[in-house]
Image (cartoon, rainbow, N blue to C red; front, side):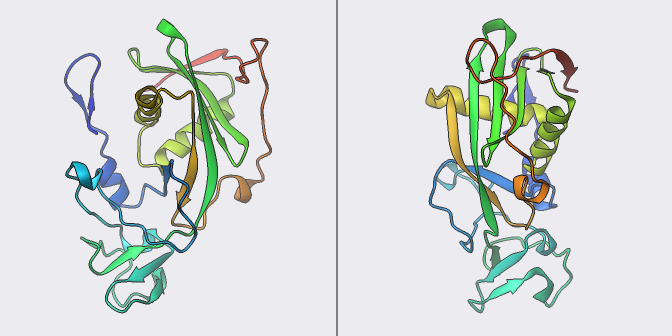
Length: 219
């Protein structure tokens, strides 16, 4: 990020800014090593590829590990203003509050785009069709589309950038499913907090994806 625009030029995502000011609430990780209480070291990109360390404002993570004292601090225990932005990892790093297992499913539809479904803790959050060239999102259920928008925003991205990123990963790794852990550094959870039940309506093709009926263009 920024993305190469299919129509030429670059698309800015403002991902780093959104993370620093607290709009980003979680991150999707495909490795399974994460457990609550582990230290999180945010980077702007993979450090092997020149990514730089950054940090959050104190108020935007529930608990922190002080690199100065070695102690765990709640966000209310810092002796400076809670909106203070920590410029590096040298003072403190956020701790993992918890996680939810996730699974993305993808189906390439040729000129009609890519169907993307996200399950969190086995509950279907959304199933949409995204066309990268036209930058349009087609969906059946307005509630699912709102969930998609919320999840993308809490991941620090616009809806179109969020879908584009995971479609990119699917194509890069040649995988129709991507699984892992959704890492939270706040107490918020999608399924546990809302009691969302699994919502799976296979269509007649047996793909497990709901049919798409209505259209919404991503601005």
